[in-house]
Image 1 (cartoon, rainbow, N blue to C red):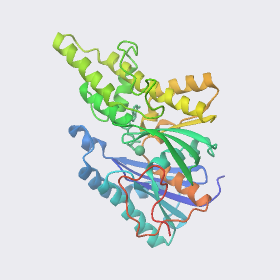
Image 2: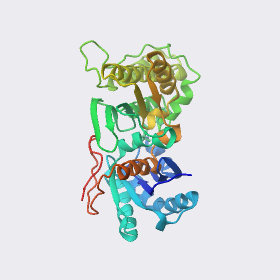
Image 3: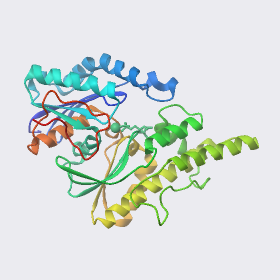
Length: 348
Ligand code: KG4
Ligand code: ZN
């Protein structure tokens, strides 16, 4: 039997409309409506299409979450909503809805950071977060290494991508290979039938003079493009599974290498991997192997919790509430470029 306040979370930063309900560390409901099918033919998320889809999905998704949890709106003790980072129009739909519910119910509302929510979601599966904690955050828009002292109060950035995010690299390489959007899950599936050693793609930012914790994936993307072009010029069939597996191996290798180094140099015994790319099977396997060898405890939420959802926002809201962090004033603004160190917006 779970205890604590009932927290409702709303997520609309990209193409998933998510509503989650959480009590303490317990997940009660996680309803997600995705507009991904509307974006496939464009090869990426179209912001205005995503915002319109959120508008249509918001109320039905809310009702589905309440039904799943077996609670009523009036049972909700506090709300949390993604205030940034994300697509400007999409964020506005979620925050407008959350403000309306908060006002009508007269309950506190937290405008929260989407990236921190990708970290907090792990409490729903593995319980309270250890501290300090190194976090490898890998999503469609962000790739960062973080040192987390307390997900309700203090997050420090150790490094970040200088160009493409890891998920963006998956999406762009999938496109190069003629595979549909979003590329991550498709490459993951196709790579299972390929040889990860078939092509030695470059490991960006791993030279002795490179920043230890920053990332770069644009060189890798270009290397895949050149390799595919060369094969086309030579008139040879492109071994898509081998290319996908070799690309995926390069990404997983660099991500885990840098995460392990951060744990070692900051003397931290716990690593968490979060964000949509944390659903990747090879990244999960390689991280498990390397953490096992180094004696580091690894936490990765199950794949459905890694990709965008409302439960992650509710989970962060529950942490903020438990830590006594003041809620946001209802006139808070969204912040499409919200930095990861900023956990909430518009405090009272
Ligand atoms: O966290 P997320 O759902 O949305 C953002 O906050 O960006 O991440 C979406 C990204 C997309 O780029 C998608 O291709 C990638 O996560 N992704 C994956 C996998 N599942 C989703 N990348 C690699 N392997 C996967 N299995
Ligand atoms: Zn995300």
